Image (cartoon, rainbow, N blue to C red; front, side):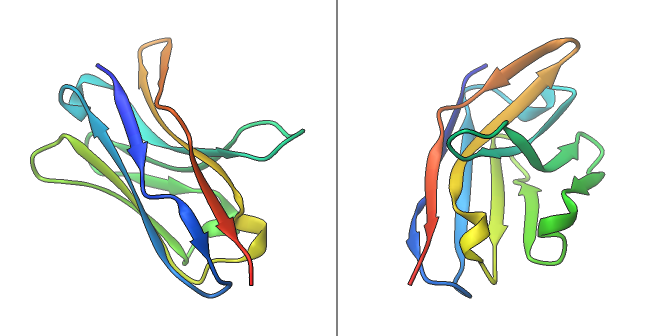
Length: 114
């Protein structure tokens, strides 16, 4: 199963974006799916993750502002990003984990700047 992310762009502080990740198969192939982000010189960090049962976990820095969801067809993963801050600027990657194997989509760049 391959993952393809889209939806990044330039947005002003306080603005919103929605990232999408389409799977070539069904998301429930994975044990869980989510979003990570990375800035130059830093490690990739977890943003949000959602299990097949719908249980979600978020990084403390995004709680209350970013929302992860998956569609009813089980092929699309979303990250709704509200009240964006300059610190949210990063390349965002969708991710799936199957047992001990990680699967990564290509990144999509989000830039928060006035």
